Image 1 (cartoon, helix red, strand yellow):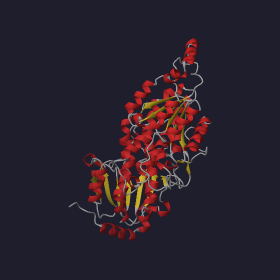
Image 2 (cartoon, each protein chain N blue to C red):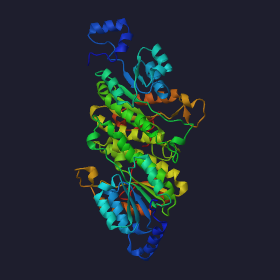
Image 3 (spheres, rainbow over the protein chains, first blue to last red):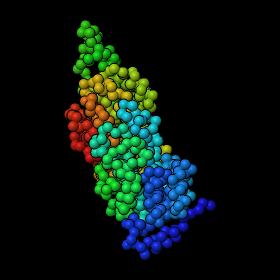
Image 4 (tube, chains in turn red, purple):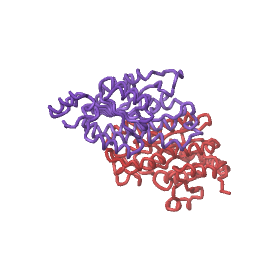
Length: 267
Length: 273
């Protein structure tokens, strides 16, 4: 039998929080269980770290946990982190994990796993079509499938939030503003992700589930390669800004698309 | 100006006089005047109506369809209008797109209309509704509605650059736009909506790249058109193909570079992203 995370953990965590509420940052309030996809590095890793440090129960997924050394080290240091192997683009694998975690309430599902597809593959005039499916499956269909498979877990929780990490690269206005970026599939995938999420927000409203999209800012991770720009922020900075947004959103915000600054992003 | 006629088939059928004139002038007599449009998914619905109306305007039409054998109505149109050439093309098949592009290499195309698309069965919403999504369908939607138009646009881009019209459009949908009245407000249709959102983003991206060549790339939103499979079903806001397509042709006629990357409805309104 797979080990289940007892619901009790969350309640104990919440009780512990009340005594120190004033001293804790906003995202420490109402601790619960968070599932983060793509937690091996970058923004996903930072979410896992920050939530774990705050006392949340963290289910951190990675395609290849064996290779995720920093995540393994993090889990060693924080007993409230549980690592699960998951490729979000694999429909069967998502179903299997949902089944394994059946009965576990998940307060916050963070659809973070994503790929860029490589800028060398996405130059208009020399597009490498073979990377299209990978980008779409991971960035769009993965989050859709995750939300579908884990909606019961989220519905059974206290906070009931599904967060998808999007990008202003997927905003049509953003595309027009930056013609020189070679990321046509990535952009198309994030616009599609947003479209799926605004629909999902409606579909899940009855269940009390809040669905939002977050643009993390231009974060300096492996994702952007050697690109260095003044507006870039670190994964730590990004997550420090987005966790309070996740903490404060209510049903009034469902279907909204936030920048890391808290402003609404353009579609 | 190239000596190559726009479409070989057209010039053969223009008649002996034209060919003789072309021969004496050293080039096709009509090549400078006749505009050429390529329309994907021409066998029925919006694509077929585009073919009929452009043919009626005297344009040379390259009408593509996955299965010309089954395209009876299109064949009928082509049989009475020799400027309509039917070509077999599956926009999801890169080799098929490249092969057709090779056939037309060096020939100007004034207007490319990426129309081919799939909607799914509107009487059976389940495969595209949250909770019952059929994940085996998703690639078909993405490949046909988003990737196909991109591949066709890339493959025929040089032809459009050679043309006088220098216009590329893709047929999108209200369902591909954000906002309560659009994709966010209509229930279901997940695969269709996300494929159109992807198409929009991709074409906006291409529109930026194409500006330097003077090629205008836009998205057209046809409205809710009574295509064959809708039959006699009554729906609010439903319009007839004639109205939608004549409206879109008017929009295309009036396109300027200011419209690059914009979604324009059949009635000329700009559709919010």
